[in-house]
Amino acid sequence: MKISELTLFTTNLEAQQHFYTKVLELPLMAADAEKFTVKLGVSSLTFVKSNHSQQAHFAINISSYKIQQALQWIQKRTNILLCDGETIADFSGWNAEALYFYDKDRNIVEFIARKDIDVMNTHPFSTADLLSISEIGIVSTDNKAIYHQINEMRPIEIYDGDFDKFCALGNPEGLFILVNHTKKKWYPTLEEAFPVDFHITGDYNFAFINGNIVAKKP
Image (cartoon, rainbow, N blue to C red; front, side, top):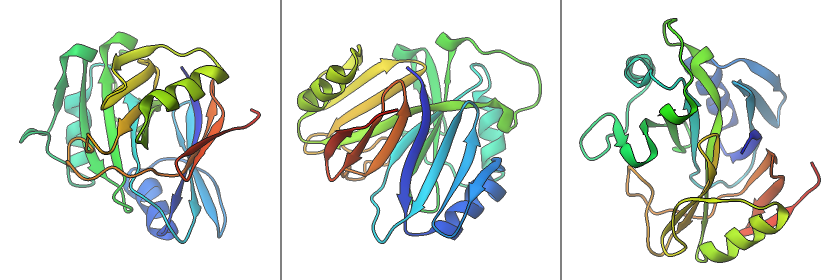
């Protein structure tokens, strides 16, 4: 499942632009007084100025065998969020490893190295190893209803989990992470998860606004 563009909302537009372009050194694709867009491999990430925003949780696929290099790279730029006391989370069931950090809105950003996509190279870790946006968290009280709304747009597989607390839809290239916030908190910080507005384009095209999915044309 491909995620071409993810749009989030921010109350700290200038700080976010500085973080993504100067700290993470992502290429700036466009910017004005109301929004900016950065390049993340084959995806793009846009932040739009808003008076209100909630904490998002999204992931970026990185080169499959570079999680240790990614850790060294990110530790020079910002603080790591510990995963049960460790700097790297081992997701053996997904054949992957991940690390986490906050951006300036305290969105939880994840770098995940998935061996199943088998992207290998030997150059030192850089932004060239940030391959694509690969996950976005969708928070509700009814994972089953969210699944059916997405599946009606285009059939999608359940990758892991179930409808009770946590359900991942898609494949290692792209996943919707459905979270029932009455039963599960954000990993790894264990903060309360709240519905967060976003727009997404790619294999699926919709907005998630005020806890509701609104389909849109690609």
